[in-house]
Length: 82
Image (cartoon, rainbow, N blue to C red; front, side, top):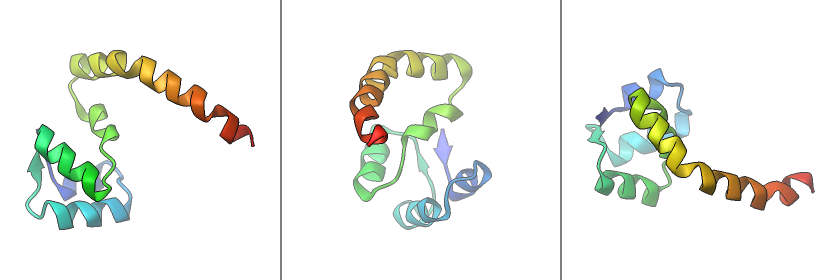
């Protein structure tokens, strides 16, 4: 899969993320581990990309990350209440 600034805009990415994406990947990028690492390093949000995966892969991603997501939500719950 190839990610471009136009794809981000089509999926309503916030302007600051689109600007940062263009600066980091002027011609777009294929989704690779190296590209994801580079994106994270510069502050791009990458978790949403799973929503663009085909349904079986998206389901597998959500199943694989469910326990981590639950633990995270439980860990931040006290801060949200405060």
